[in-house]
Length: 147
Image (cartoon, rainbow, N blue to C red; front, top):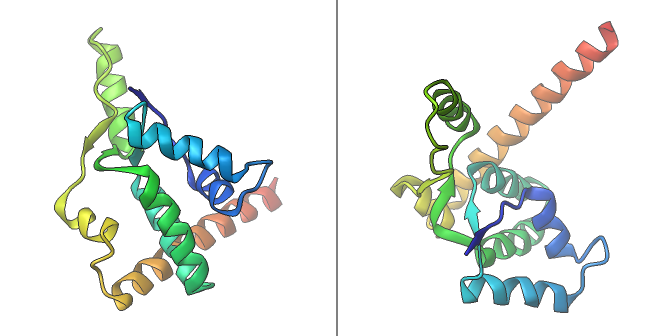
């Protein structure tokens, strides 16, 4: 089994059949996932970014979330970047093998993956995510303008 990480852009390309992807290509990916040849771990960043689509269009959100949920491993997720960095530094410092990149999905996150959260919760997550990325982009822009 090969572990493959897809970021939000890859899921969007699959959902919208962009960059030359075809229905047959998507079926091949789905077949590999279903057959266990590849595992695409869940990612809190991908889920948050997908939920943020709800602000623009519920229909787009539903299509994109379905694409994500059809492909990801609902048992394991990639660890947060801060945890990966810390573990990698410790592994290097003590000449130890790299740690596992994945972890079991916590119960609170499982509810989001199963879409049990009510609409208000999803809208709050979408709004918070959108605000976070907008503020981050503004900060980067200000930094570039000072240069």
